[in-house]
Image (cartoon, rainbow, N blue to C red; front, side, top):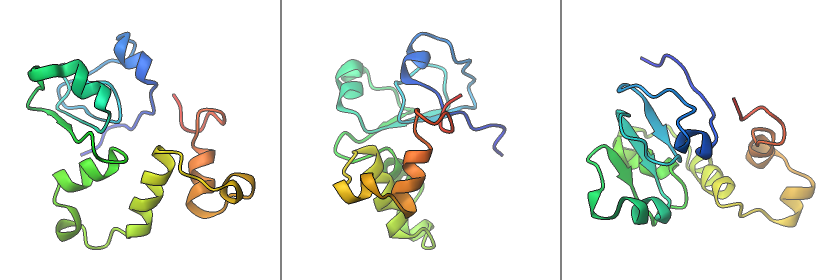
Length: 126
């Protein structure tokens, strides 16, 4: 079902450096024609698309991250009752960088994982 998972930079998508296939699903990245589905939450993508928002471009500019956009598209809590709400909250916190000073200075749990997966460690990039 899943062939590969890539962490890519948005600019690499826009510059065509990432090979796209019609079976690919992207999240939190600029829309590229040719993908199967693209999930996002950035108002800039709504503005860029204008009235020409493609049917396969699933976007909610009011969402705090792309995670609830994907989650809701596939059925949300009713379809995935075992997904912990704390996990969803952690993803939204990380994507919007809503950390307390204590969470930045002495991270544990989900904040620590989100910092480890950041671009400065190389663990969350290609």
